[in-house]
Amino acid sequence: MASSVLEATRAAHEDLERLERLAVRELQRDPANARDRLFQSHRVRHMLDLVVSTSDKLVEIYEDKDGARKDEISTHLTAPVQSDIFPKYYERLKEIRDYHRRNHSARFVSETDDYEELLKEEPAIEFTGEEAFGRYLDLHELYNEFINSKFGSLMEYSAYVGTFAQTEKIAHNLKATRPYKEYLEHILEYLMSFLYRTEPLQDIEKIFTKLESEFEEQWTNGEVPGWENKGTEKESVLQESAVDLDYYSTVEELVELGPEKLKEALTARGLKGGGTVQQRAERLFLLKHTPLEKLDRKHFAKGDDLKKEIALTEMKMKRLCEILDEVIVRTKENAEKKLTLTYEEMEAEREEEEVQADSESDDEDQQIYNPLKLPMGWDGKPIPYWLYKLHGLVYVNSSNSSVKYVVTTVTGGEGLMSAISRSGAISMGCDALAFLILRTSMKLHPSRYTCRFTVVLFVSCL
Image (tube, rainbow, N blue to C red):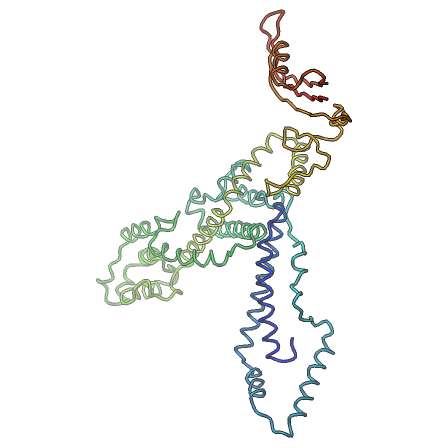
């Protein structure tokens, strides 16, 4: 809270500019690994939340519901009488001093203050062990709920991961129930939580707002995936229980149809079928002068609304599954692989993945740190120093010498010698040290072997 409304407005605008610059600065930084990339996204998300909250405060100030902003502006614009200049000055000075006396921790505005602490914080993000810091989904609770329900079936966890989004395989009479709706809500809640933790910059509300507008149009036309036959089913029921209201001019004439016929006609149109015969007839007679679309919602059965809610929840869940498609595939592969591993092997693999997640770098062209000038190994990294000493490579001739390394593949002893001589690495006055690594061995004859070596030569010439 600032010492005045105008000062609060100025400070809020300044905070917005600082947060915007800070978010740009953070996004321009290249994260070192996946963990750092996730922390970066959460830091930027936190900055965006601060921008939204600060903007909301500015909107309240500009709305000026209590008139404080208008009064302060008019006070500054009104030319004071000569005798009131100093009293107003000291009154304003007293307000500023009182404000800073009450707020000792008020931030001092400086050019270098850019909320540096926001760039250094490590967001607290919680993942289960199964999720492996966002690499996989943890659907075990949902899997148990599915296989123990009437609409579910027994299957392996890996199979469930690959098919839990395929809701069209479940029969409609099993889907139009409260337990199924609660199950869908649990899936949606988990996927939203996982997406927020792994991709905090995704605007889920915007995605759902667009989806809901698409859903309303598709539901009206009977084109919602998995619910396409809703309209045709209703038409067939209407034909079977057709009651042409043009032939009836009063409610009493409809009463003569009987309770069962009236209930059948009402339920076919999605209306409530309960009540007395008189109430059913009155409810059905409303359709004679009022279209079904404009009828009051209190006359409709709750089952139709339940189906609509379930269909919308299914669409939301499938949209999130499209966004998390790679994670779902990775989770299924991981679940299948775990079926062939022991507990010790799974724990060792999990620890290895954690180490890799901490050490992996996105910059493949990063310069390799090699201050001892060690030879490169097969993985493109310097060989260990103990191996360097083991092969005697640490000893260097003190005289002027030139060193050559030759790597070749030869077959047999004669091939080895000819390859060494052809390389031009050895001449008179040269000391050579050759390392032979056996690659393949083939028995051509009981007394003859053909061996293939990788030869590494260390040659020092005076």
